[in-house]
Amino acid sequence: MATFALVAIDRVIAQQGFEDEATYSEVADAIAALARRAAPDRPAEEHQRVAAYTADALLNRGQREAPFTYRISDYTRRDGIHRQRQVQFRLLVEREDPVRGEVVLNATRDAINALVGGLEFDVEDEQVANEVMLERQLAKGAFAAAERAAVRARLLSVSLADDLNRLIKDTRRDLRAVLDQWANDVPARLEAAREHIAARLESEHRLLLKVRESLEAEDSQVTAAAARISGILSECARRHEALHRQVITARGVFLDEQNRQAFRPPATGHLPDLGQEVLVPLLGQDSTTALQVVDRWLSDVTGPRPPKLPRLYRLIDDLWSARAPLDDARNDGEGEEEVGEPDPPTIAPEIIAAAQGVVLRTGLPARLSVLLAQALTGTQDTTASDRQQTAEILALTALWCYAPEDLEPGQPISIDLAARILGPRAVADTDGLKLSLTGWAGDDLIIAPYPDALESADPPPAGGHRLLAQENA
Image 1 (cartoon, rainbow, N blue to C red):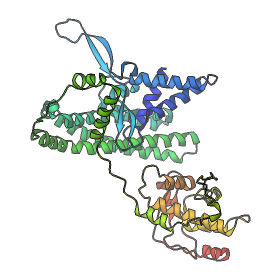
Image 2: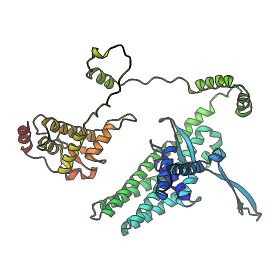
Image 3: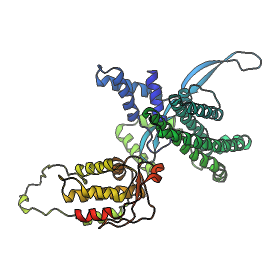
């Protein structure tokens, strides 16, 4: 159970601070998968119960999600008197994501410290020591230990951001509660944090350069470990860049909240006791009256919801789409609709497979003209229409990698298609050369499997693809 708890905390921390923060069901599914591996002969219901028990225990749902408490002996008093002190902490907390409209899980600083291995340490010093250790491990080629140090660096970055987020949150809630901190130690803390983050960004950039040198090693295990370390360090760099922006704007938050809270007129209404004056009388009413009160309260709290504005390009696509002809023979007075076969996919699977085959045979980095020529040539068992569609899909995915568009949540079609055909890290760039294929216009893009491979692309062929396209036409 301790292992399951640590895995759950690690799963929450890995997604904390991003758009896809972990939900209760995602964490429970991850724990259930581990339970299934530990006891494959047990029923699936038992695996789910183990996962729910672990997640509920971390949230302390048995005590209505109250903080965990325990008593310790305190010997810090100078007079030598022993006393017992009660300590409270939380591990996982639930909060509502206003963007997604879902309840997500967040790990507290206590959970992060427990996962790292201690409850009391200086985060800045720990980060510096961890980076020195990581640099030494990379120099020695100990990639397994270096990967563990990189994971530790990510946890420390989350812990460092949690301190600043809590200070800003308390400032926005009630400036008077943290006014003494702003007057005494917060300015020095912000200056020290700014210098610390700048040093961390420089160190992470240096470590990334060393790790990327190992990506060209012949050993596949070393290359895989270096790729994972590079991804973790890149994530730490993104977190530190975001934290640097927060440190810079923290003084502005203090001044804005001082202006807002100091000159805000006092509340003229009576603030009721929600427990004794609202909840207890409501529970004493009958269900009909209680439902009326709750419905009115929900409508006042949530407020009006504006309708979603339509997208112009979607409206044009709907108006231009071909309509199926009406079959009068089917209108025999029956209002029931027959359930038919599901609509075929927009892009046929064999076209996607053909495009993947072209990329596999050609290899990246490559010019767009080379990929198009290979697609238009095709094989003997493919039709001219399929070859043309394969070439168009390759051109569209290359354009997407060159200039990706902002998609709404729930519409990762273009991203998924480009990743399936060209690879998850594929990029495209141009050097100004134009396509020499008949029937195609635009730049002859350079497509590479990752950004650093753009410079190793071959020069465009001289006239060969033009003849090939003419013969294919």
